[in-house]
Length: 215
Ligand code: ADP
Ligand code: MG
View 1 (tube, rainbow, N blue to C red):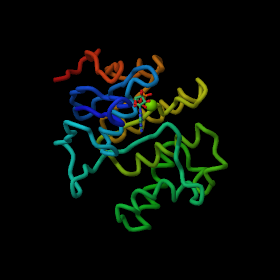
View 2: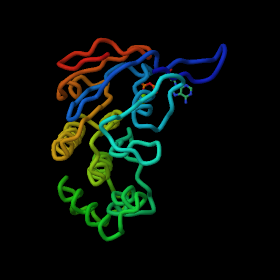
View 3: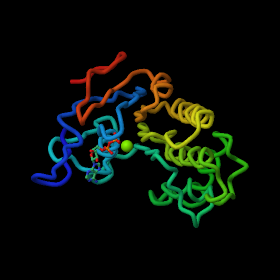
View 4: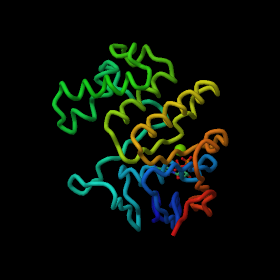
């Protein structure tokens, strides 16, 4: 799979010939320096972007139209809607998926409770610390019960201790779901907590380290 931006002299190829497979329950660290193509690859895996050539298929996930269902995404920053309280932020993807409002809010509150965020149910996003915001974003993913979680440097903007806590929460959430996880990071301490490593350099994916395989 390839992804280029622009054309001609200004063309940048962010992902070049990447091939891979994510198996159920697998936990992968996607490592690489800034600009190596991690975000581009994660967006392609999430179906938020379309490859210039090649394709992403998720035979283990269901489809709604031509989009896979069961993928949860955690971005670098929490990306919460400021006008909604924490519960409604967590419930929003469920509401958009036409889950009845009462059930959506109940699932949102369950996810918040599970991550130790029950006290923040009615808080506004601008009252949250960076670490709390990222935990709420993880609760939002958890409430959707995905089979695959994609996280793009989810602790990149946090201090070391907060980052460790947020990573604990993310791994616990993924455990509870039995979901697969791909988390991009340039922090070796994060990568060391996962089962295997995909290392990216200039858009190329190197040999995986760990028990995984690429084809
Ligand atoms: P990483 O997440 O590892 O920092 P990115 O996927 O963000 O890497 O970027 C990979 C390369 O693609 C970089 O050279 C970056 O400048 C370029 N790039 C990313 N997004 C765009 C875009 N929307 N338009 C043009 N170039 C982009
Ligand atoms: Mg990035």
